[in-house]
Length: 419
Image (cartoon, rainbow, N blue to C red; front, side, top):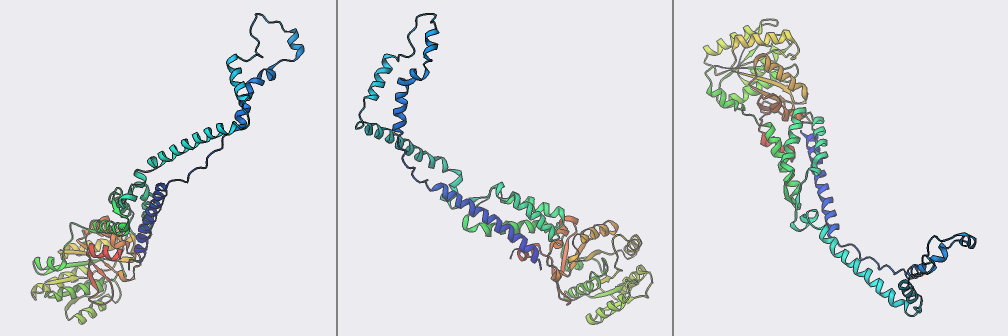
């Protein structure tokens, strides 16, 4: 139950934790100073050549002899071959240095290089420290938009794979983004705090202002209370009706059946068998009879016998079958049910959402019950119904026994998914 959904959400949490761990490692690397650079040896020979270059420059730039002879200067100018006196003195000074004097100049240049590299090492940690490694000192992590952007996109796809409705998957991702971005959390609590946020978001999308307790609601209504069950074929509608009968009987209410499914073969016999096992009354008709008339007779019988609740079965139908929907509208007009409950399979996926919307548009639905949740590895439908349709989810069927009907409680469901 919810196994696929659990694995998808666990992948999201592990992905976020992995990214934050990587950021912490990068921050620690920034904190560690780089290794000291090796001193760069002074280019003595190159300096010597550069120093000697001005002395030889005139020779290199001199024209051939013939060109010099034929060339007539326009005005007397100092010969370019003769260096200035100041340069000549410096060049002579450099040229006159003996080999023993050269290492002194080499020492001076290398010391300057060491000093410059030392100053750079002092500046680098000041630049590298700051926001990038602040969490290293505070032992906290701040979750940023870049940390979860693509993770949330993948989560949306994962939720769709788990039968979560499209609009609900977008809402879950949006609410998670609002909760997580900017959240400061101790490193050791990242996974647990993220799990808490996801649990709160899941719980919030499953909440409904229209939710009510069925037993309390029935006790507060005038008797006999009429409850109509609708849904597609094979969803377990008649069996669910029997489970509700057991629930109400245990609460001290008297209950009876109206076998108004006169369309499906063996539907009446199935309702009779459940009534026999539960020890409650039943009103039935013949196959092909008007289901609305059967419901009318059952209500009259309950009123004459002071029975508290009449549970009205109906033929299974698809939301696209116009004739069966018209028959359902007739039952609703004749019986005037106090509550109309949709029964569908949890494994039905998004088709269940469309069915509820169609039934709600036709006769108006007050609540829903999902069956076969024990066979549902995805569980996304249970999360989607309330937010997508606005119809409160009342119970979940988790087995074939009469007691295998559990109240739908968003907090417990969210906890179950996140464990």
